Length: 144
Image (cartoon, rainbow, N blue to C red; front, side, top):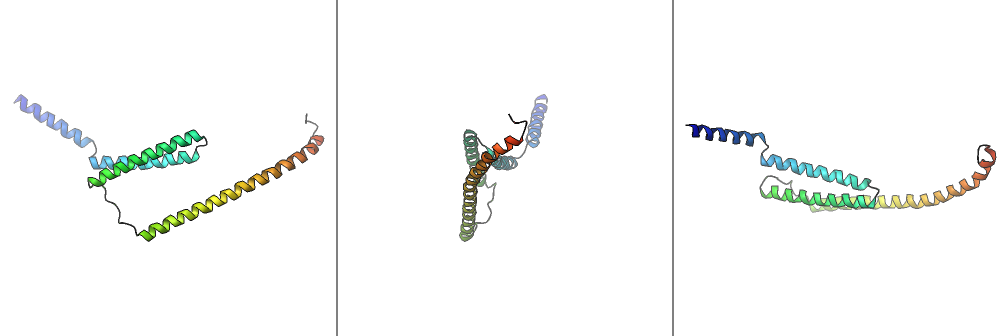
């Protein structure tokens, strides 16, 4: 009788521990969501990094996390835990890609235009400042 009570107690403990934690599918969805969020955070860090070494580190971390996310997605798909959306029409995908490339090209041209213009305006500002400095110095009694 004592042995039977111990077995029941062990079974109860196992059932409680199994129900206290998430189901596998819920756990995998949570991990998948966290990996997606982490990729966004690393991407933001990459774009905001001013140090090339830090930028490269976050780029590598982003790529590693994307690989993990892809592996987990494939595992969940194989286990029928993740259903994909209906396939997109090729022409819709091509249009989105073309729109993204056009936007990227416009951004590149805008940045190039502004950076080349800044170089010219910076030189003009420096010339004006150097011409103005002797006049300002003569009028300012506190200038040493």
